[in-house]
Image 1: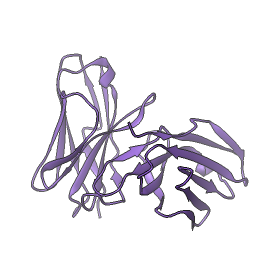
Image 2: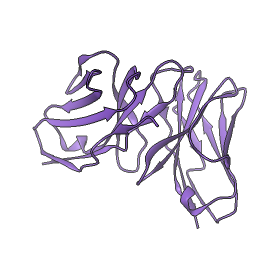
Image 3: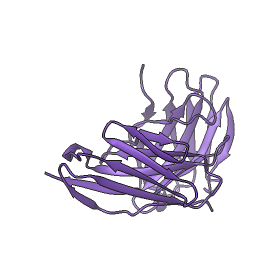
Length: 113
Length: 111
């Protein structure tokens, strides 16, 4: 069974631009969570989607948004990029909402210049 | 603000020794506890989960949970250089709540 895939793997943007990241969960998994990982803050929860609905949200500004499609694939969007948005963005898939086991994708490394 | 605290390390242990990693959490209502391993440049992978007080063993790994003291630990017996990684503690309040991660402890196993 294929694992979680994320595209693109690397991205360089400039301040003020926007970016869209994509995540395809493991086949049959319906819950997708997004995390931001930085050396100083560690792994921070952004949001979780299940059945095309946002179920949980972390403490990030409204510039960070996401959505989930009927095939469980998910995208996250960051608008008006800031230097501090440079990070590794990780997607994790799980079987269902509240499922204990999360499987992480390889991540998208975003650099904002 | 629910918090999960870990010593950032690095924790250095000689090959063959026992590595002890600790984690404390602030939310007394937390019900599920996880340890993830993250190699440099890779994504986290789940190695242990524990839900009730006491010990849970899986091969060379033992997770220990003490809800009264609000701490969870991970013991790695017969540590190997391949165990060198950052270990992330994660806590779930239960139900459909989000998982909160600690910042991780970097473990170095010296050959």
